[in-house]
Image 1 (spheres, rainbow, N blue to C red):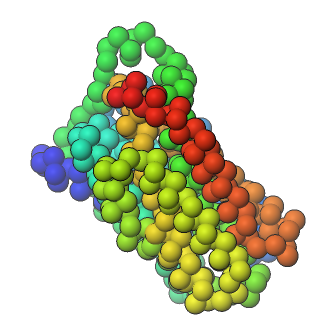
Image 2 (cartoon, rainbow, N blue to C red):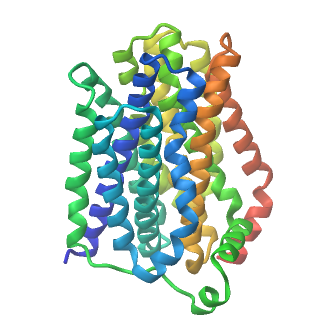
Length: 391
């Protein structure tokens, strides 16, 4: 069996390929459905299938993980992902693709729940921000590379699905060399509190740390699921959009690790407020320069450098606030709030594009970021006292 260091990088590889498949699927299906004459609101609603799968599966994962350990959860999740990806080319029906998206959502949640909890429970407090920054960094790398697969549509519509399934299978097979482990248990807490009770307890302590995950989900899904549709409508080329969209994820790669290390030193809240403010400014500029290809390349990169780290910073913040026995519930709730953001992003984005065709799509993103920044800023004093009590 592999060492702890090798195990960490295998887990990171799984996160990378998960990001790759998600980053490919959102714009790929959005473009296929748009070319098939599907309305933007239905297109956005269809994109929620992945995240509905996440939410439906989440309440049923904590107990199996405590009983079976991390490895079986990750193996089952990975198998669901690569099998579902491989099935897309076999039947081009809207309802069938929606079911496959839901199954990928279930599999991805199992992968992320297993890898996140394994990493957060084995990282030391001093290196937690850095370890989770690597998690976010490589997920972002996968997500950045995924949209490039849309260029394969000109070769064959089935090719990106099959290539992604093959890569997923290759990385998934490495898990067979990893020794299983179980999450930390406080026997009194686990035996006297139900899963629902632990979720409620987690929400009371760390709700503020769940908002960045919601915001990142909204951003990620709307930029990948609706911006391609909006971009086509304002005159941009498909191939150019497939290059612009990854700039957000590539931007996050530049600052993900430095921001994680900085948050270890300065605290999560000041860094979160800084990146949210930067995101509001860059998307405001994007609204003014949305017809400029050069402007979008620059501003997507800058926005990624700021808010591309929201998810990993939110996980670090949540881990700081919670005791060890509540981390499985906390990681599940991060996944749920991320999914709620990811569901509302394409759906609200699709409605926004239809109802306000003359207003920039980026104003919607600015509004969401401002609301999250306000909540974190005005709850600052209360959250500090909670953190001190739980720490």
